[in-house]
Image (cartoon, rainbow, N blue to C red):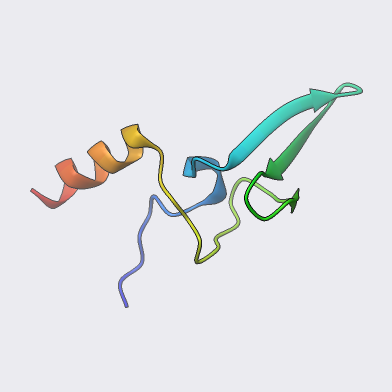
Length: 59
């Protein structure tokens, strides 16, 4: 399997970042728990601009 350099939580439509108490909190809306921007899960659904970058890279 080839590694996808775009595949990370931060590029997923379900990734949510918010500042709480002066600290950044990262949360996956689909999975329902805290995550980190560089984590990777099989449920990854890339944001639209990431899909365009991936398409551009392959052509």
